[in-house]
Image (cartoon, rainbow, N blue to C red; front, top):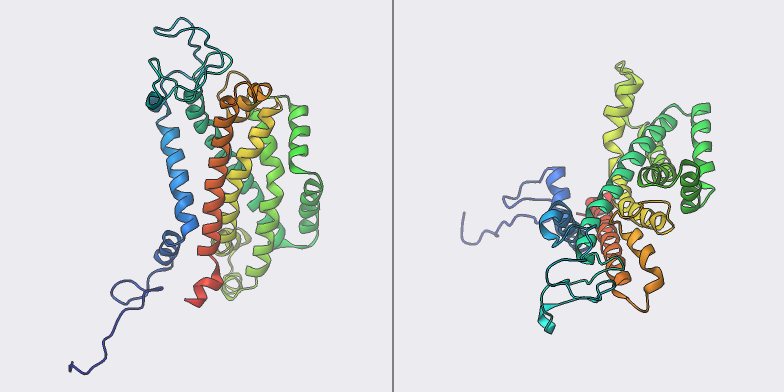
Length: 317
């Protein structure tokens, strides 16, 4: 090429370094990693996952072990304030203090991350699976099937989700498993309605019509042709739903309907310390901050995924 020829540069958006168009998966990953909210949310959730997976190593004590009779412990132990070496604290160190039963708050908060993540992921997995199945069937078949399924979802949506969860747990009995089931049930309509709306906009597409003309059955059309093309809004909603499930599980535990003592669940820890907010504020601050951190991380990731997976943004690039 001559020296006067214009320089050819690769297009950055939607292209790799060689100027070739990236695959849809690579383009989506690029958008997620270049979205500030998504990156911050991923970092926060990654930190929580590391803490949850390494809880047995990170925690300085067993979460349900009182410090009575331990070497170096000096009375009074219950509600002992945080002990930080940088401020001249002597051994033994309890960086988040002790609760009213002389248990290490730091160890309980660390182990609580494992329980809260388990609650959020389990609830979303259950409600997403059931809701998507209902939405697929209702949107694809229509008619009386759609009316029957969606009216049932409307009945569930007519009640405030937390009040309905409380009613279900009251009937089934208090406990973490029943709380998980209750939160999962009240979350199903959200995914069912979202899946149905997406199916209605996709099932008349050319590739679905072509599959139907080639003799594909309803099951193949729903799960092979339609489902992969409606996952984007469901993934975003599921990410936001984890944070919602963590809050609702903490609320049920706070009311004594979820996790039961001595489980190190953040809502249960708040319930035990609710009368000590002025005399021992560290017992309320640390589990409350943990709940806020977890929910904020999933909300930031959900907002970032929504922006990164928005078809209008892909089209503009």
